[in-house]
Length: 213
Ligand code: AP5
Ligand code: MG
Image (cartoon, rainbow, N blue to C red; front, side):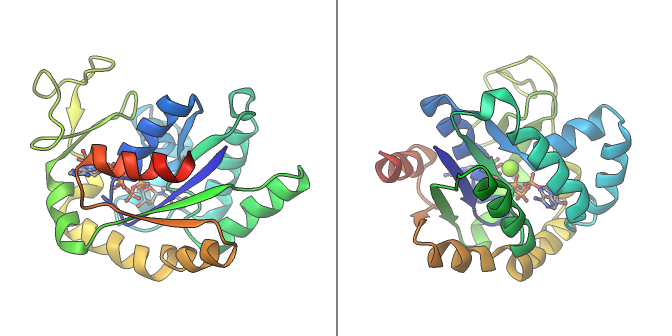
């Protein structure tokens, strides 16, 4: 099963992708997490990506597409995967489609987690992230067991550099211009499903599972 998660920054794509990955035993592939891990490890890729991420801009397609295609070609992705944060624009979606169709394959579901802008700003400021394993928390909605420490791997939790209000505004703008058109793109393919992302995270999850079966 191959799933694409769509939704604005902070809509809960990562939160849901993580839960789906566990339930269906498929990898959660997040380009944002891959970039953040590279930044944390000081790699060349990380340094390059950071220039764009800190401004709330998209990392150039040449870099992003290569990383994503390498990742989904790995052994653990043969049964499927849940993509979170990719594709991010129409050219990326076309590259993915082409790569899959060469293998006689396709994306099965595009899930759009729909959340209005007001909720988004609130969610971002309360978010805490683990840069080591990609886990996501919220100081009110999803607190870790021990304050500031990741439940899963014990590393320190941080406020993401790009969660500053000014950068969040840019990310929302970029989302509207470049990413939102993907809703139509997958709608035309007949695989788009909308879920109300303002519900409690478990209710959002149940709604998605009802779609996937
Ligand atoms: P990326 O990491 O993908 O960030 P994003 O799309 O902006 O999405 P977020 O991770 O901010 O939000 P989310 O939807 O995952 O929400 P979450 O589950 O954390 O990308 C970051 C940057 O990397 C980009 O700006 C770009 O520069 C670059 N990049 C990445 N991919 C790229 C690509 N393909 N091409 C080019 N550049 C790329 O939830 C948010 C918060 O809300 C959390 O605190 C969570 O606990 C809480 N929460 C979640 N669900 C609920 C709920 N139902 N109720 C209450 N709280 C909730
Ligand atoms: Mg995310």
